[in-house]
Image 1 (cartoon, rainbow, N blue to C red):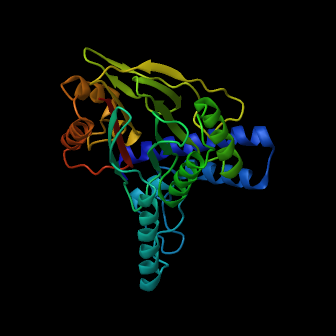
Image 2 (tube, rainbow, N blue to C red):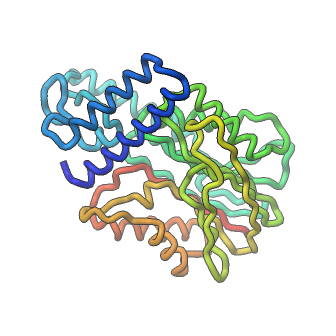
Amino acid sequence: MQTATLDVLRHQLEDRKDRLEKAVARTGPEEDLVRLLQQVDTALGRLGTDDYGLCLVCRGHVDDRELVANPLLPYCLCDLTPDQQKALEHDLGMAWKIQSALLPDPDLLADGWDAHYRYEPAGPVSGDYVDLWTRPGEEGSLYFAVGDVSGKGVAASLLMAHLHAFFHSQPDGRADLVDLVERANRLLLASTLPTHYATLVIGRTDQGGEVEIVNAGHCPPVVARASALETVSSTGFPIGLMDDKPYRSRRLRLAPGEALVLYTDGLTEARRSDGTDYGTGRVERVLADGARGEPRRIVGRLRDDLHVFLDGAARGDDLTLLALRRV
């Protein structure tokens, strides 16, 4: 197992341990939480040894990509018959069809804004969330969201669908963004395991160029102005993580031709074979180096530069890019 993979797994396991310990302190030693904490401690103790990642059935090694998606995975696919593997592949294919049906049109021109996104799962389904929508009774506004559910695979994709359903089921009329995020936070706290949470940026534009944004622990969006770049830092914790932390919104105004660029950490944490991460600095250099204009061009420049950076290395995480430009 490569050192870079071990570092990713150690980071994930330590993060899960920290959140489980906080959950136990908050709710008491519930059996399921204590059991999960013990499993994480055991995995951390075995990490880097020959025993870590061994299938409990065949004693072969579980695929590294599967372990990155779930560091506690105890089995490979050895105990599945060919028919069972085929059925699993069919179910995953259907899951992707359902998930892709939730995605908005990749190109949108509405209410003075032009938008384009790319959504690229690392596996059969994705834990990334991207959305563009309007609301009845609120003409002239365009809502947007980009999020990243912790982990990967089917569990993360289910939480992504949960978020989509929540935001699209709100009553008509103007929504308060801070209130929306606070309620989404309570929803995830009540309906998911402590090991799962989501970073999220949600915002609203109007025809006059004003943008309101709440950034719940997500990668900072970049505002590409005519003469400079600026970032929108986090205004609160990820949702589904803490129940007593406030959220704030930030307002800014874009002139015609200026753009807002959002992405998930599948971009900035993409890692090539020498262990170097793509990083936020490279995102900003690409955007500063003439990557303005139409949203499709902005997204394309970032994807092309990521491809050059990886130099043939496999991308290990879901990737989402969204650009909105005032027209």
